[in-house]
Structure formats: C-alpha cells, structure tokens
Image 1 (spheres, rainbow, N blue to C red):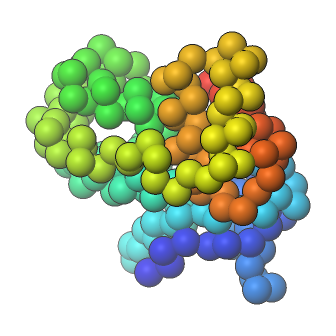
Image 2: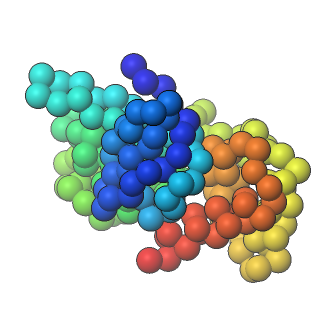
Length: 192
C-alpha cells in the first residue's frame, strides 16, 4: 500500500495528475487538479484501489480527506470513482457537516448519488466522522498563521481560513507568500 507520494507535479489532466517521485511518474486520480500547477512540489496522500482488472491510485492533499474517502467507499454501493466525484463538488467540511446534520438534499446533489445511497451514507457514517475532523492548530507554522492573517485582511471569513489551514498542512516548509498563493488557489477553486 502506498501511503503518500512526495514529488513534483509533472502533468495535470481533467481528473488526474502525474507526480514524479524518485524518477517514477505516478498517475493519481485527483478531485481538483486545477488547484495544482506544473512543477509544484506536493505531498499527495494516496489510496490504492486494487481489483482483478484495476490498480488505481486516488490522491488527496490532506490525511483527513483520505480518511473520509476511505469511509465513504466503505458504504455499500459507493465506489471510489463516485466518492472522488463527491470530493470534486463538496469541500471536506461541507461533506462532514451534511452527514452529521443528515442533510440528504445536499448529499443527493452530489454526482452519482441517489436518495437510497444518500440515506445509506448518513446511516453508515453519522457520528463516526467528528473524531476524524482535524484540530485547526495541527501542523500550523508561523508562516501559515501569517498567510491566514493576510487572507483575513483580504476579506475571507474565519471558517474559510480554518478550511485553508487544513489544506495548507499538506505543504510543509513554505514561505508566507507561497502559503497565501496556495490558500487563494484553494478558495477560488470553490467559486468556479
């Protein structure tokens, strides 16, 4: 099992990326490739999906996103491609909130999810996700905090900045400017 891949983005496709690490290019199914740029150094947390006719990698920018994905595909009738489609449409926090508040309408609005599957997601996962929500201070650095202050100065709300912080923890050892750029890319990806 490949837990994560640390390297540079060499190719960006519509629903996947290629990350080169140690001279090997890994093709990874990825929910929002537009958040990344070519030659960008990344650490992608991966889930390896093995079947007789398939060996695929699914990638995420944070460990909590990967854990939520694994919980989603444990729901009867929900495969990895559909689960990744959910991540394309909904943020990590919005999805957890919808499950915990039993918001069937929101979950049904996801691609490939009907009423029966939405109900099954809530039945299987409600109450099991809160502990997987990351602490907002985990892995933060002075540079990340400065970047969040800059985003707040630009008018972004506290809940948006909390979401950005979770995302930024997947990118250790960046400058404040790099974190601001990554945070803006992340926030703008939801406004498309």
